[in-house]
Image (cartoon, rainbow, N blue to C red; front, side, top):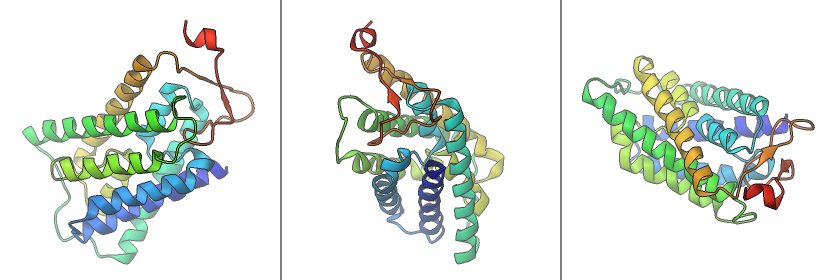
Length: 239
């Protein structure tokens, strides 16, 4: 249960930061968003692996670091955290003065591609810095993950809204920042980006495959806490 609470809390503060900085049109919003993700990753990494993002959880599931039942619990906690953040944002601030971001025509393609690319980048970075056997213990994973979101938000925020995260997209729609009518652009693009990132990781790290022990605990965290992971024998890993 503590893992789900950690995921809810981390996602809550991520989406809350998105909501407040974007609603107030803070020019440094990407820096704040990347920063809060970084510190929340450091705060919760040892508890849950600090996904805070259903797309990341999907990538970790495909990679083999979490069981399906655990992934479902993570996603539920993340979406709940995003919706609670939306409610809290609306308690703090009035609804945004600008219309919710929506897409039509060529904008749909542009936003879709932008979300696929930077969700891929985020999930790919997470898998490499927080689940790779080459980095069993490191102190840079939070900075790398937060930095990826910051770069993505600065780069394509004006094109797609820069969600890269279904929990952020749902929370932003609940706040009135994104339009419900085109939220599918984010959700579908983010799922594709995460799945491709996991496939790329497995293709480039064929000797770093893992399976999850289905018996004691359905959740195996990515990141620093890896005690529940069942590693294959060295010979099997290279077959």
